[in-house]
Structure formats: C-alpha cells, structure tokens
Length: 161
Length: 206
Image (cartoon, rainbow over all chains, first blue to last red; front, side, top):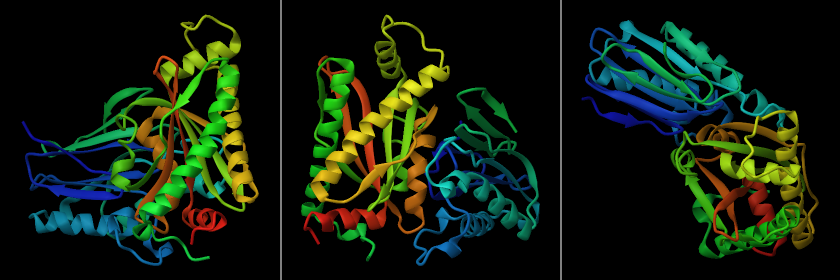
C-alpha cells in the first residue's frame, strides 16, 4: 500500500513510485498534478496566486503558479523524472462566493487557472485533463500507479480524470 | 503605513488583538442571543497567526462541510469577516428564525440562504460597530456572500489576500456556544496586513 502524503496550501511535493499525493479543500487555489509515466514519478503543487511578480519578496515559491510549477518540475527531475514525458492534470480555481466585496478576490480563481495554463505551455507540458472553475471546493489525489487524478467534491462525489 | 511584520508581533500585541476579539464578539454574541432568545456563550478569543498549510485544518478538517458567510470590511481598515456554522447549527438557527420545529430539514432555498446571510450581517455589524466605537475608526461591512462547502476551500478565500504580502495569515477567532455547550459557530475577523497595524495604532499600541 502506497503512503498518502499531504500537500498543504502554498506547498509542493514530488515523489517516486509507489506513492500518492493529496491536497484537501481546494477553493480558488489551483492544484497542479504532474506525472511522468516512464518513471512513474509524480508531483503535486497547491498554488494560491498567479504570479510571483506581484510580491516584493518571495520567501515561499510554492505559493505562486509561476515559481511553484518550475520548482516542482525540477524536484521531479532530481528524483529521476524525464522532463519531456511529464504531463499535467489541473483542478480547482473555483469562485467560492458569488458576491464578494472585492472583485479581485472574486476573479482570483480564474486568474490562477489562466496563469497555470500559461506556465505549463511555456514549459511545454501538455494538460492531459482538467476540472477547473465552478463554485465548489475540491479534494484531489494523484497516484503514481497510473497517474490518475482523483477529484472529490461534496456535490458530485468522486471522479477520476 | 508600514505593513506589520507578523514575526515581530509580541505577546502584548496578541493580547490587544485578543481584546478586540473579545469586545467585538461580545457585542455580536449579545445580538445573537437576542435573535435566538436564549443564552449565548463565547470562548476566549484566539488570535491565530498561521502558516497557510495550517489554515484548512482549522475547523476540524479541510473537507468538513460547513456554511460560510463572508463579508468585506471597509473604511479605515480593510479585510474580511467570516461566520462559519456547521450544518446542524445552520439548521437550528434558520428553523428558529422561521418559527419551525428545530429538526425540520433544510432545503437550502432562497429564503434559507438569505436568512443565513442576514445572521452574518447582524453579527458582523455588531462586531464592527463595537470595534469602531473602541478605536474611533470608521469600519463598515459589505454585502455578505455565502457558500456551503468544504471548510478548507471556504477558509482559503480570505487567506489568499494575505498571500500577496506575507507567508502567514492572521485570524481573530471567536467560538459561540449555546447554554448546552454545543457549538453554534465561529466568527472570524481577518484584518489585512496594513489594517492590523492600523488597529493596533488606533489603540495606542505601536
């Protein structure tokens, strides 16, 4: 039985086979799951904000889509992953509240999704599947066995993408 | 205004922030007791300066389904207020307001949702007016938004604002209980980074 390792908000982890990485209660944040099927190495990042350029000091690179994805790929390569075979599955980026005071907070989910897509494209990592947007929270888990991403919501239960 | 560095918050600062929670939530608890026509107790407020990874587990698990009511705070300070109820408490509160038997199942229709938002409005309003009187600052709340979903997903919304300037988030938490010691809900004041120092300054703490 592989161990289930938790990735927190503004956090990222890479792991060798056999393993399973999970992140709980994604709201407007985006979870980026990476998989290299040739080595079965997996990675998972839970980002809060689109770009590190808005920050004056970046002390936690896992917080931002741009820096987190680059670091996650590096961590996977360091474990032996093959950069050119890495694929991505993404989930999250919801708008949890229909009326929020500050329009910026309201749009943060979609901005996180946009930024994630952009960075993945720059790194030439294809997005194999995604479950993004909406107005509900998600828990996700990626397995090194087959690279399937489990997506769990309160409204519609569990599915694999 | 220099943003507050959470690393330099000392125990005196925390005491002052806790007192803010006491006064604000004391007023809110009184308002809630009037609505419910029964005693409402509150626990000693907690000032939580948290790493982002801790936030989602704050209310007994990131995946626990809760009702979250979010209001913006504006005026001389800015940030958010959030009232979180478990489903059972939401049911009790709404049924009480509607004059229905307490076990009546809630179908989260328009009326139920606006009743819940109104409760959030009243609590936030009374909290902030106490805070406003105390500090002489103008503080108002905006129209509430509501979500019924995973606690982690709901609590992360105000945290994102902190992410831009800091690696920590500050939540002033109050837990309300009824006379039988069952939890009614948790009320959070989440001032943004600048507002936290502004609040301390208004109270004469530099």
